[in-house]
Length: 257
Image (cartoon, rainbow, N blue to C red; front, side, top):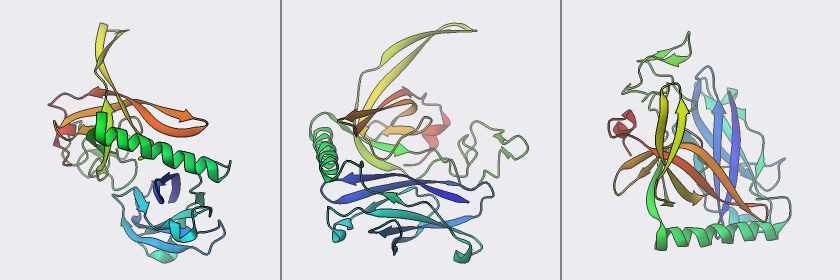
């Protein structure tokens, strides 16, 4: 069981967004602890104890206690069902956006803040990010351990992901949905056309292909096909997603948000 901090994002004015994943082939996870320190060697303090396995992120609202110029480090502790004595720790990861110094961090925070205001007040809509589960309890209904595949694409337990619940708890964000563009392709069945939309959102939570994006007002649901990170002055500013709208008969429409 190996936890990994995938991203630590500074949020204006003084918060940090921590995101992680877990390699748990034997399905022994019980819960996570989020730990924080002012140096990679510690000492570490638990800031979020017993985070449920369904959760993959945490927003630290009090890192300013260390000061904005202090380099802050986070560790995820994965506690198995056998108890905390067998817990494993991730490698420390810093909240710094870059190694260039405090100025880059401040620029990153300000860029995210400006974009968030634009999306909230001008051209954005409320979205829910349903992150596909890539660790957790395997589906008891349709997962085949021999082939490591699912037997049902419309399974009501895992929604075709092979993990119970299918998707992590949704995260509400704001984003801009661009009009659809029809892309033509050719395969063994002949010419095909696919309508693809573009979505612009902040660079957190980090989205991956096969995650689901829900437009809350209309309940339209999109599957992420591709992600294009956008940088300015070597700072990750936002994510540009290429998504395809799902049919209303798709099993993903049965996932509760």
